[in-house]
Length: 195
Image 1 (tube, one colour):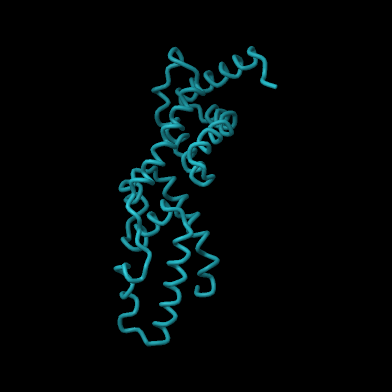
Image 2 (cartoon, helix red, strand yellow):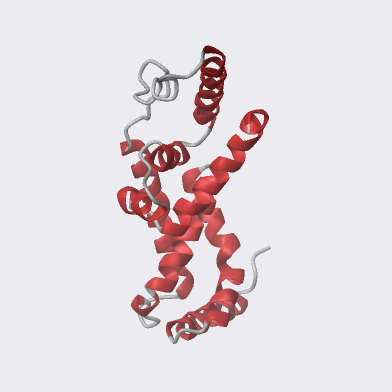
């Protein structure tokens, strides 16, 4: 059963008051705003992305944008939740567009320009072990989301810094770092015997 209209108005007024306090730089109000809106915004984003990990990334970007663009909120033009929902929705749709536009990353050994580098001048047994590790890494990379694969390839093959990856992919630095951390966590069990 939906809440009575007066409760909705009270909630809207509270969120607006919190966002106005955030405009003045109040981090406590931002924390409370996050607590009150996280579930609703995540649900909205998840309906668009259909992937919990992508939804979490978009949600992180959303709150980053809410904080950095807090001066753009105008209470006279609408409610706080509507303003935040627009930011979240745009972020989710932009993420989908980026994923569709991103060129696929080749993971086959024949197409990998880095495949032969590790084996130059390596004893045969070591070369066999390195080839086995490369095969495991390629198969595990296929299991990652495209955005995670892309970030990992830029970080480890192209040796870009986190800042350079964020700049080239047009993503917030925190999103890139958390995506890389999650990707490495997924790869770690497969690589543990070789570490």
